[in-house]
Amino acid sequence: MKILGIESSCDETGVAVFDTEQGLVAHALHSQIDLHAVYGGVVPEIASRDHLRRILPLIKQVLGEAEIERPDAIAYTAGPGLVGALMVGGGTAAGLGLAWDCPVIPVHHMEGHLLAPMLEDEPPAFPFLALLVSGGHTLLIHVRALGDYALLGTTLDDAVGEAFDKTAKLLDLGYPGGPALAALAEAGDDSAFRLPRPMLKRAGFDFSFSGLKTAVMLEVRKLEEAGTLAERKPDVAASFQRAAVDTLVGRTLQAAKALQLERIVIAGGVGANKLLRADMASRFSGRVFYPRLAFCTDNGAMIAVAGALRLADATSAGEIRARARWSLDTLARPDTTAMAATS
Ligand code: KG4
Ligand code: ZN
Image (tube, rainbow, N blue to C red):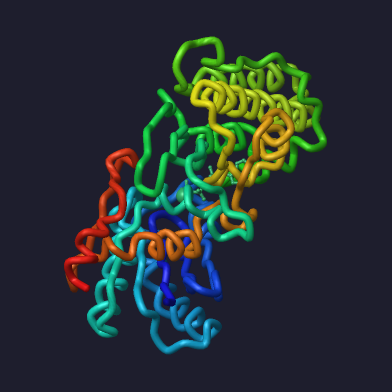
């Protein structure tokens, strides 16, 4: 069975075809980063309009690469995200579903990230601990089975990707700054500045990044006053990255130990961070799984594979779902009873 996946929740239009027998057969991505960079962040109206422009040509391209005229099912991101942007993907999926008379499956964006490692040759078995780190989320989740998610911890303030982006902005590295900051950090000394590792000593598994962000801001101000910021930027980047990674890895290991889990999945945009991947792997006694780099950030492949696992959750023809806010732990196991009743 071939599933077309459509992602349009933020500033990337992603389209892919996942075959339940052969795996991923085609994928394409259009990034809007250049359009938003001048504004220093995503402008929702510009995002919606660009999705609208790109989505059908991308779908045609991907179906061509998959050598099919139409898929057997369509999966699209139904939230959380920018509602206008989500409506473009949802509307396209609903329209094509009617035209092609095939099932249409709404997918939770973060569940897509969570399941992205299923695209790899050695996917993780359930249960596992998932660290989902993106521009909008920092979540630690006990994944007992597909759709059986217990939220262990989240951020009390900024998401870790946001902290990377804001620190990058302080250092004038453009938007989104995470990858640029990580690249600059390679040339820096990660012990140059003493920065806090927030929350590690507190009970529970929540995160907080605003204290770290403020500490970096104070250091940057001092450097500006001393006129040495330009030459010390790599040191600031490296010290920030080290503190953020220590916090993420420390918290995740505490949770893995408490729940006696042997597998950890890292996913979401910040999961592309090399130091985070390397540190988690070297400090954890069990196994760490992550998607290939291209599927850490937003993409259509993760939506297609999530759709393949949730075929039972197809909605009625023509229905469009788009939710700005949607908590991952409200999801349920796939509705296989509905599937049995209709087949
Ligand atoms: O998952 P994603 O593509 O979009 C959201 O759903 O938010 O994540 C984007 C976030 C941005 O904050 C970006 O700066 C961050 O992921 N990011 C990174 C790296 N690559 C992307 N942060 C740190 N290191 C990286 N290599
Ligand atoms: Zn994302």
